Amino acid sequence: MQEIINKLGLEKTEAAVYTALLELGPSSVTEITKKAGVTRTLGYHVLEKLGWEGLVDESSGKNKKKIYVAQHPQQLVRYLNRKEKSWQKKVTQAKELLPDLVSLYKIGDKPTVRYQEGTRGVISLFEESLESKSEIISVLDVESWKTSEFWDWAKNYNRERNKKKIKERILILDTLAGRDWVKNYKGSRTFTVYKWIKPNDAIKLLQFGGELNVYDNKVMIAILEESKKMGIIIESAILANIIKAMYELVWDNAESVRFSRKK
Image 1 (spheres, helix red, strand yellow):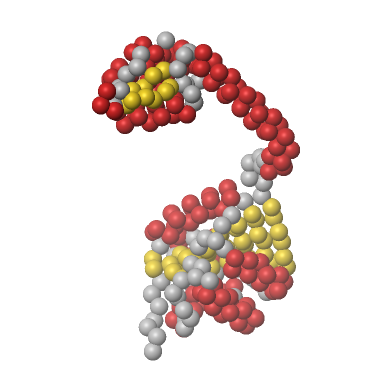
Image 2 (image 1 turned 135 degrees about the vertical axis):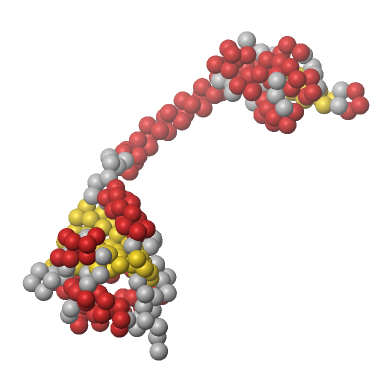
């Protein structure tokens, strides 16, 4: 009987307690929970819920002891009728909401790609990372940052990033230009951590000539060579997560950059 009542819509413990009460007649919580095979605490909770549903009544016995009585089984039919009407209402509401739900539905991860050329165009893409909700992970070829326009802008960018407390981890190519830059670096490193990429570990990157930034769901690639300055942002959570995972493998094995102490 308990399994049948369970299939009718009551949860397993509810069906066990209700069946026990039908068989016992007016009983205490101790008697009911013992027959139903549930704890007293759970039994109290289930009996209270069955009371809300109109399936169980509570009364006082001897010494003001609580006694529980199952309502006539006809109440179970009424309960199921109410549940049916409630679900029919929910189905109707779901059908009415369907157009709005479809408009929100996304199939997979549809990447969007944006492209900018020239110094100002690349800078505008870099500046989008100042709205990042996550840390920024980067791969940097210092040698590509040759123009004073980029350097001057970068100083202001880093000040703004520090104000917003946006953290950045940077893998920097271990080149002569990179070593020289580190030797003369005077800026703040409060929210920035640097590690080296050794030439033998990433030979192909020695011709990178730019920077890679990954944050939130965005992958930003900047090529900063004099003849072809351009920037690309790809918005794709899948792509960003793949690169982040690969980045961690390199980061864990990279050597920390040691800066000279400020005089």
